Length: 392
Image 1 (cartoon, rainbow, N blue to C red):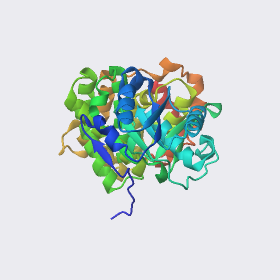
Image 2: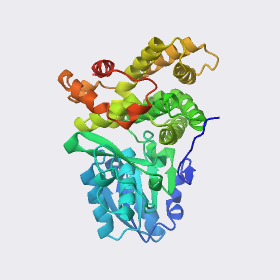
Image 3: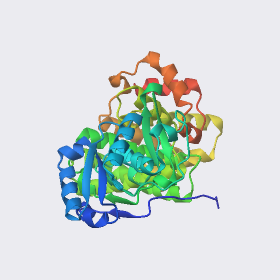
């Protein structure tokens, strides 16, 4: 048996309506908390509801919006606000950006300094050695699984790169996953965030860092997303589909934390920092082409590589045919993902300004990403460049 570790948040509360319990669940977080909130959660009345529930429980709430993906500047600014208001705890309410920002702020409250001090690749890469301030993650979209991850992804625009602050000390004290909170998500956001979750599950399942626990969760999540994502996209009020995607997204966060990801996320780090492309769209646009490139490279490398069996398991989970032969399962999975991206109306990356002349620089930067280390096969710069061209 492979030796491995598995880390996740100490407590998860999952289910429709559990958000209403936040006053009770936040006991010990106060007396003052900083709520880092997505604009969509504010517009949808979730911040007002959160504030009312917490104040009824005796907590003082200070809020700050997280517009777009977190940057060094936005995280440092939110941490300064939390210190100035003497906040003892943090809550992230919204999509993965708000939750990642809250996670970083909680770490900075106890460790001090700037987000850049702790960022991999582009920052000083200092280790976080102190437990973060207590914080709670409340996702309102089903995508990144950030509520259960130990890393926070932060952009550093001067270097055109996004990198992680990573530590088990950053895990939330509690994740409150209420699928009902995603019921008002626009179809395009449902599509992009859901494809991000599915991408994370597939990359975890095929990662060189996979282990038996991540395999179990990843394949269950792939089956769930394969059944539920298109339904949630077509009918935002489909409660069963929303439940399924909330669960799949949470599992994707647990698997990526413990197995790591691959080339899609290696590209996402640089593309998202260089162009105004939502993270989920990057993943959705790249996933079909990276999968095809990986499978082609594996088939050329050996007639029966172990990593190809992992793609067969992914294919069987996607098409929900557990006894499909390996070759048919691999090809069926590739076709499923390609068709799903079309049915979800995922835009090409060129829509956001990526041009052919940008490709060499993007490939060079992406090859430095930690995620590339866990891709199931090493892809040449030429293959990576072709993947980008196909995703435009």
